Length: 85
Image (cartoon, rainbow, N blue to C red; front, side, top):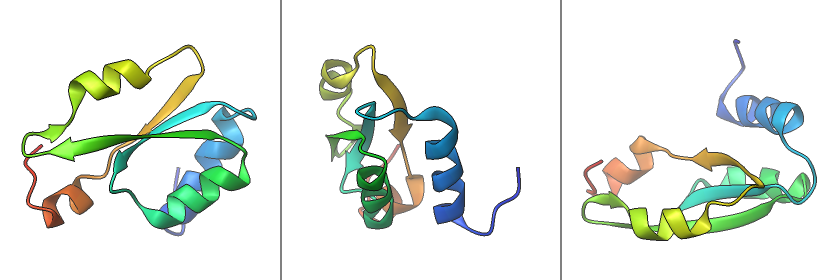
C-alpha cells in the first residue's frame, strides 16, 4: 500500500481494522496527530510508558485485552528521547 504520509496510512489502518471502542495501545509519549485520529474513530486509547530499555513490557501486558487491535510503536520518537529499543 502506498500512502501520502503517515497520517493517511494511519487513517487507512483505522478504517480497515477498527470498530468503535476498540483498544489502541500507544507509547507515552506518542505521536500527537495519531492520538487525535484515534479519538475521531472513538477508539479506547491506553498509553504505555517508556523507560531506559524501551517499552514497559509489564505495563504493556496489563493493557492487552480481547479488544486490542493496534499497538502504535514509533522508533523515531523513541530515538529522540534517547531510549534504546
